[in-house]
Picture 1 (cartoon, rainbow, N blue to C red):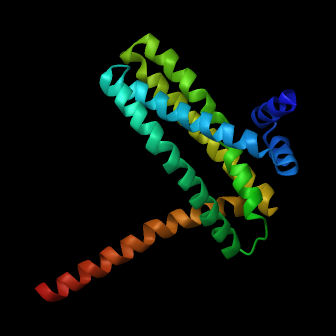
Picture 2: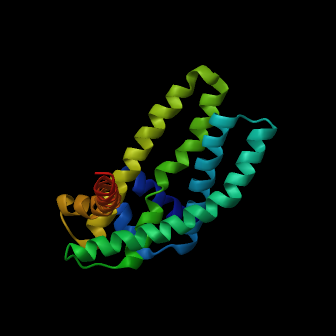
Length: 193
């Protein structure tokens, strides 16, 4: 039983598409939540270790980050699933929000490497923090690629459409404030002149 769960994680690392398909088929909820907690706790603790160190302030930040951060990450996971599902609906694709929710949770597998990386970099000294930043950026790209693969699988769409589904909410979030700011500037200019 445990070996089957580890094989899912291994497949997600070595064969992401097959791993995501197996996740959708088996729906291992317990493993999903264990992975979610480990990945996010490791990410929060690893980043806190690099930025704050292991002293009193670092322990406080890690404790506060874990207590608030895990809840915030869970809420962000639910919100992201809803936003991406809405975006997919806007692009006329059909799929399951539940499958997307499960796959997005398993897309956190690369985050499992952040805490061990932070421990290694911390042991090398503060002057080596750039290694942490560089590799963490790579982990972020890897996670993004898994999210795009999850959308492709959940909505049975090509990569281009999956990228549109991902970037549509981002563009909307950037354009709406820009339009509001422009309207505000125009109304201020009309009052002044």
